[in-house]
Image (tube, one colour):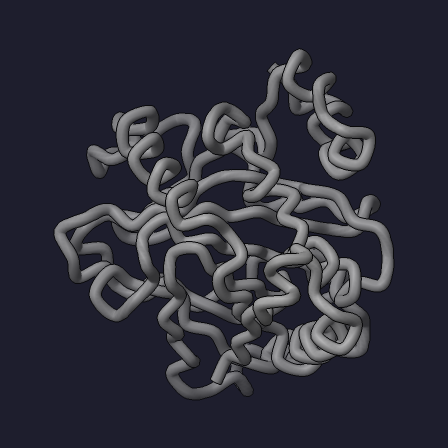
Length: 267
């Protein structure tokens, strides 16, 4: 099962995990390739984001193909989200509890490579099992020995569950280059609003069916080493979209985190 880590009262008050907690989280990412961080985002902010998404991006919820959104399965699409309220909150993209976990797992600097929503519509079926990417030397088998180059962080705007659908994960599969040797149904955890699910970009996973009558938007962020580039998922839309005026108002730390947006994916 996917390991769950929740901040203690002291850690939540300080908005910082202890070194011991960070090492445990990093070890989970190294061995399992996945982790759940519980209760790191204000639930009221998550609710606001869900309502805003339903209103501002309603045209994507009609079940039809769109020129600026990628179909990633049956009734399931991936679209880029603008850094506008409430999605411009650093609690989402620069969460003070999340970023140190990524830093411990990568043991190196990283940047935000993509920011968007994957939304499964009512009646969507099980997604195909896949990797997001991150394979550097596909024919050599070396990738199973390498540290993580990129991670997906998924923050549900509606609880991930058997009813709404969740993400099934094949733990440890980031260390297995041969998909034929990855077996079983995967672990399909419940992830509550305010929590997030992290996985290594190489990990096999699949969105499960949405049996509810509601769209299930999943806010996702890709964090990667500065030299890594996703060549597979962004042929129809940019991975990041932000205004120059908004970027200029960020702290120097967050400007470094969003250097990919400053470097060209700007509107």
